[in-house]
Image (cartoon, rainbow, N blue to C red; front, top):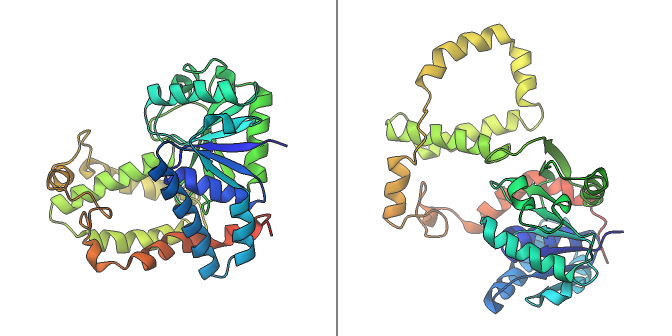
Amino acid sequence: MEKISVFGAGVIGSGMATLITGHGLPCVVIGRSEAGLERCRKTIEQNWDDMIANGLVKENNKAAAMALLTITNDVTALKGTTFVFEAVAEDVKQKGEVYAQIEQHAEPNVIIASCTSSLSSSDLAATASRPENVLVVHPLNPSHMIPLVEVVTQEKNTKEVLDRAYAVLKQLHRDPVTLRKTMPGILVNRFHQALYRESIYLIESGVTTADDIDTAMKYLSLRYASIGLLEFFDDVGLPLEVSISKNVYPDLCSTTQVQEYTQKLLDGGNTGRSSGLGLHDWSKIDDDDYRYRKQVPFFFSVSKWDLPG
């Protein structure tokens, strides 16, 4: 059995640690600052408290999981580790420095699964002394709740490494999709960016509002919760799709630059939820309710966990 650790104490790393200990497995989380380590612990506790509040787990499950958790900035704690989810900043050089630390302190056959959403698996592998052991495994946020992970392999991965990686994902009840080559944004973020670009274009053009776009997307998302996007287009028929494409494609946003509407928000310090103002006024949105809505579609996934306690 693999001994799994997490390198990175941010939101994604905290979610992965919640997932791992939620399956009754010990987990070491490596962070940097003491403040970062404390935020990580509080985030993990909040994850468990949310699940308890919604009747998904019990207090004894949380207590048992927290007992399996080690959060530290001492990289020697990686001793014995055979599989690492790497979740540090989106910078190839910084990740390469982290890989050197992992390779120094973990087991010689350690697999490094980067949680990057944008960097090339081949570029990341090139920074490691054992590039065959590096691949991308990108979870979605909240990473402990959403089963989907995007796996991006690279030319030096061996069958043994891939078999081990997929075995870990199966053990953690993840649902992987695989890309055979690297593309910026992988799958989900490419879809996200296409939708975001078009949404900002519609707002800038005075066509509609952020609220109405979000309302439309909530119903559109429900459609694709039960059928696939391409299943839908096969269902309506490609002749109709071609007719719609001819009408709509020429008018879709095709900019390759950050749009003025977004840039003005950033220049004004309106960065989104963290600042209280962005595309929405977050003072009008209940934070607990938002966190609940963000997780509720995926509550079913916790029922599959091999909970401790």
